[in-house]
Amino acid sequence: MTSEHWKEEPEAEDFPSAESYLSLLVGLAAATKLAKALRNQKEMSHFAAKDILRASGLPLLPADDSEVSSDLEKIKLGKHLSPVLLIQGDPLWVADGYHRVCVSYHLNEKTPVPCRIVPRSA
Image 1 (cartoon, rainbow, N blue to C red):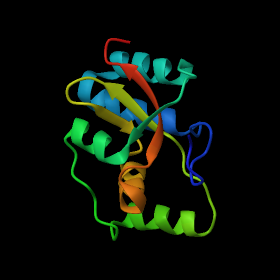
Image 2: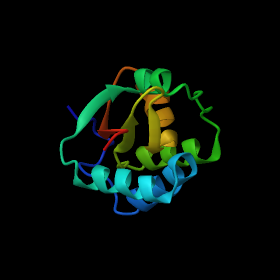
Image 3: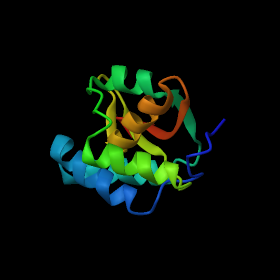
Image 4: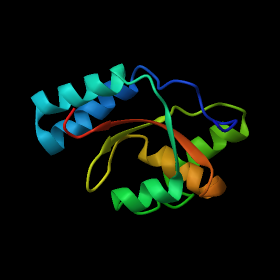
């Protein structure tokens, strides 16, 4: 189910990035717990980029956004992107990978994006 431009597993540095972002939303202790749950979640889920953006309420970044365009260039060079880290809730939180979701949308909004997802109560 994974697309040709996705890695099988998130990068190690994605988890501290997710924890940093989540600490702004829920404080450091809860963010650390959520990041640990993401690390321990080995099952990969797949969702269309359009659905991730819709559930999160985040806007689609333009293709000329610096990080989006950089990732689009990586894909052109045959490099793979790290799966996205999500926290399930209303709204959905994109703990790490917002730019990568936008990249996938620009390539094909319906292609499944590999994600690790845990509930907010984790």
